[in-house]
Length: 328
Ligand code: UFG
Image (cartoon, rainbow, N blue to C red; front, top):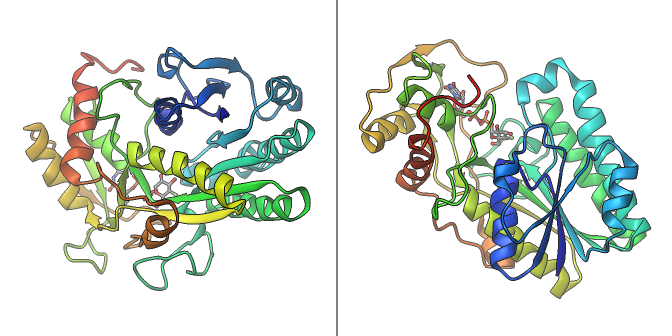
């Protein structure tokens, strides 16, 4: 199929674009490069610079004719969304409506959307399945949930079929070593841990040691980006084959604490990784992990690279290529 990967120069997007290319699809990347990188665009992919906030940019892109699009062009910092909701409204919400309307105007019938476990909010039970109540605790999570609802309406009224993929904690890098762009100003645990291992930061701050978990630190479900990427390809096949939309969780089903992740990072990198326990970070749930049984059943998805060692070693390999922080 002809697939437009919106946000395809970003960290997750580049892995997704690669997976579609490898599966034999014709891939075009659309990205405004606000956090995406040109070095993340592969030979064999077309590139259209553009911004989802500008309907004209989308009109120009979709007029080339696409069977499907994948939408990963979102701001994703939970903390920032609570301070600057306007930014998330305009980009995540209005930008997505612009995409949906451009799809309607140009007869593109399929969309695979990066949703998030942030749509659930604090867990009422674990593991989290797709029936778990949806109570986002951040404005970021709210934007993802609202978009899922827009998608359902466009499905009903305009016959657009969608896959909303609720990622848990995306981590790791392309095991084949072809994607080596570092995220600018990373906010997540693993890249921050790598920056400490490289000596680019003095220490890792571990947020909270008094949670009701086995070692007092928060538990998360880390899932490899290449596994996530494969789920996008499988989802598009599903909605095409079944002519039915899809909402699924994507997690490794394994809960890892921050302390366990830090110790594993020390072992895998052979670096000391100084860490200090500090106070809790606002908005963190104590434990979050998924059941991905539905993804397994419907799209035949099973994570292949989401074990802790592969998550860390594939990331460490990329950081080892850099003598210094490219953004310092
Ligand atoms: N953490 C630290 N120190 C740090 C960074 C993180 O202790 O410097 C801890 C956090 O407190 C949390 C865990 O590491 O307990 C993971 O934190 P991340 O910031 O990496 O990820 P989150 O779980 O907060 O959020 C991520 C994505 C969201 C997504 C969510 C879904 O960033 O976009 O997973 O589970 F919605």
